[in-house]
Image 1 (tube, rainbow, N blue to C red):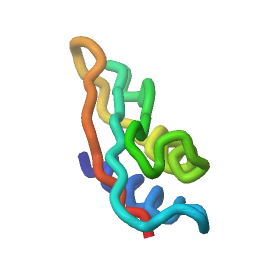
Image 2 (image 1 turned 90 degrees about the vertical axis):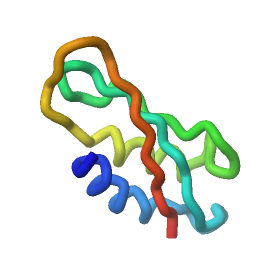
Image 3 (image 1 turned 30 degrees about the vertical axis):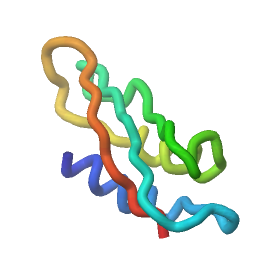
Image 4 (image 1 turned 120 degrees about the horizontal axis):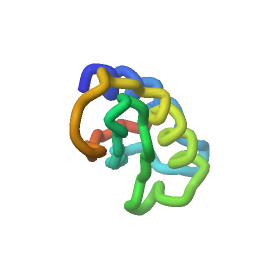
Length: 81
């Protein structure tokens, strides 16, 4: 969660001029190798926007320690300023 939080702070700077400030919930799926398999924002007003693309790109840079089992999904809130 520390690694996600650090990249979440970076992603907070992704808000485009036309997007409102606020919180976006990002759903992140990690592969057992520790890499992000996917990151998505599914809720308005950010879903499908350039802001969402920037946020998910920053979050996808996160790596965690490899783990056993199948992919794991976590959610993180990103505050967009």
